Amino acid sequence: MELLTIGIDIGGTNFRIGTVDAAGNVEDFESHSSAMFRKEDAADVLAHVILGYMERYALRGRIRGVGIGVPAVVSRDKRLVRSAPNLPGFDSLALPALLEEQLCLPVFLDRDVNLLLRSDMHTLLLEPDKTVLGFYVGTGFGNAIYLDGGFYAGKNGAAGELGHIPMLDLTETCPCGNVGCCEVRCSGKHLEWIAKRMFPQTPVRQVFARHHGHPALERYVRDLAVPIAAEINILDPDCAVLSGGVLGMPGFPRAILLEAIHAHVRKPYPAEGLDLRFAAQSPQNGVRGGGMLAAEQLNKAVPRTARPVQAASGKREFL
Ligand SMILES: [Zn+2]
Image (cartoon, rainbow, N blue to C red; front, top):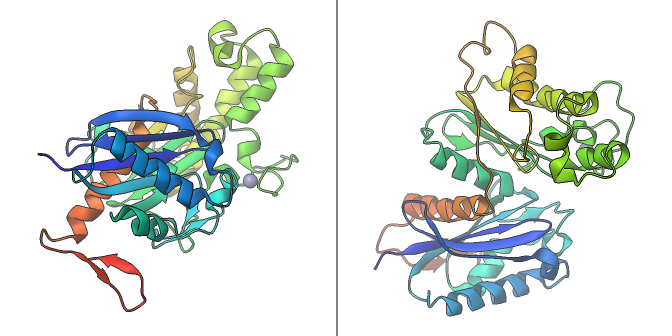
C-alpha cells in the first residue's frame, strides 16, 4: 500500500485538508471554515480535526507525515508561527511540536504562499534548481521567492513581504500599520473598494467581465505590475508565476498586466526572454503543496529505519 502525506492549508477564511500521493495527486479533499481556529486552543482543535479526518478515511498507518501552510511569518527553522494577524489562535505557537505530540507523526510547517508556489512549480513542470518567483493576488498580495533551488526565508522568516514595500506618494495606512504599503492598492481588498464605489450593481467577481476597458480597472491592473516588476528587476528569475483569486476572475485582462510588467522590467535584461506564466488557482493547490513539503522533508531527512528520538533539548526530532 502506498504511503501518503496529509496536506493542510489554513487560510484566514478556509481550512483545507487532503491526502497527497508521491505524484502530487490530492484525494479525500475537504474544505471547512477557519473560524474554529480563532481561539487560544487552536493547536488542540487542529489536532482533533486531523485525527477525525484520519479516522473518517481509515488513514491510520498509511500516513508518513503532515505538511501545513499558514498565512503568517514562519520562523527560519520552520518550527514556530510568528505574527499571524488573520489567525491569532496560532500566533507564537510551536505548532509542529504541539501536533507531533498528539498525532505521533512528523509535522512540517511553512508560509502558505510557499506551499502554493511548490504546487504551481509541480503543475507547471518547473525544474527544482531554478529561481522562481510566485505572485498571488488574492485578498492581499502574496509572494514566494524560490531562489537557486530553495525557498528564501530571510533572517526572521519574513522575506517576501512584497505587499509591504512602500510606494511613492501613497498616504493610506496599511492594515500592518505602515503608511503607503503597495498592498493598499495592489490587493483584492482595493479591487473590492473600487467595485463598491464605481460599480455598485456588479458583484466584485464580475467587474472585469462586465466593465472591460474601464480606466479605473486598467489603472488597478497596471498598479499590480509595479511590485511584480520590482522583484523581477532585483532577482532576475528563470520564471515568474502569476496567480491568485483576482487574476483568476472572469475577464481579468492578462494582456494589460503582462504589458505593464514588461514596461517596468529593465531592458535588455532581465526583460529579454522573461518567462511569465499564469497558474490556475484551485482550492487544492495549498493542500498539494503541504503534502509535497512533508514528502520532500521526509525524503531528505529520514532514512527508512529511523525512528523519532528525544533530542538533548527535550524536543522530539526525526532523524
Ligand atoms: Zn503594510
